[in-house]
Image 1 (cartoon, rainbow, N blue to C red):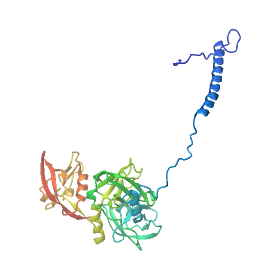
Image 2: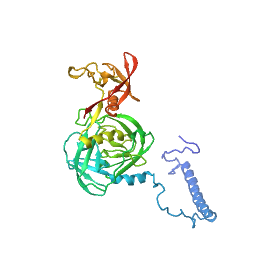
Image 3: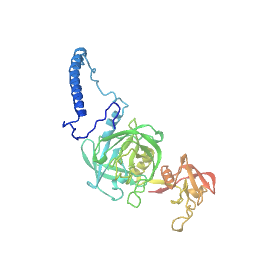
Length: 390
């Protein structure tokens, strides 16, 4: 079909009755085309000649971009580049069991190194594995486990001969706000001294890393979510704020498949999670002082199969025991079997996992408000959280 401005031309090759090889229409078209070609060439020559006579030279012999600045404008005292340069020497790579696994850690006051429990235990598969600490200056020293806690996913290491490295200060994670700029520092995939930047995407995000049915530790925490890239090997490294303070311990990433604790079957998709510094601080001190940590409990069994909103206390407990421990925190607060807890302190509770996260994020002995539903009515009470050894 002919388009606008075009003439339909037959593509038939049937000889013309006069014996000519090409039809007259094609001869005319060829003549017109030849004329057009001549005009085009001539026009190009003439047009080019005219253009060279009337267009000024595009060169500017005096142009300049100005003097080279003394330092990049971004590297001010409060820039992320300055924070990275100051904090990175205090971040280490941890090799576990020879070359069986790698993770990250950071130095704190006293020369101790903080990392994840799942790093030093190879995701729960090994206990007492050898530890090697690779420092940012290229030195390598052996490490010794001081203590670890599977419930908070925190571990503390002591490194022989470790001196002169800057200790990273722990910040106050209660002051973290969505949108705050952050840096994640670590050794993803064994690439030491890797720095990624982003923001705080969310706070109090319930996270339960670990694959069901595996040896991965049963870790529960209300995480700081960030879009700073966290990949396998980043675990245990610090999440720092714009002042260089550690506000979280990088612990998990969500992927499109696999285990969020280890990041198998995928890399960062902008969903990284860090253990809040205030929760880590409490566990770190306990591990250094006693070698173990304690966590808060409510003294009640939960119904993991409850499909409604909230965490339901089970009708009956395990092994024929009461679901609400007699004399325990929940019993003293007046909670009963089948009650559905919908809020703890200022945090809404969506399911049993989010209740466990919220409880374990608080210090044992804390008294907090509880909202719960009983027989369709909303009720309030307060609970004094108990304590259990991890």
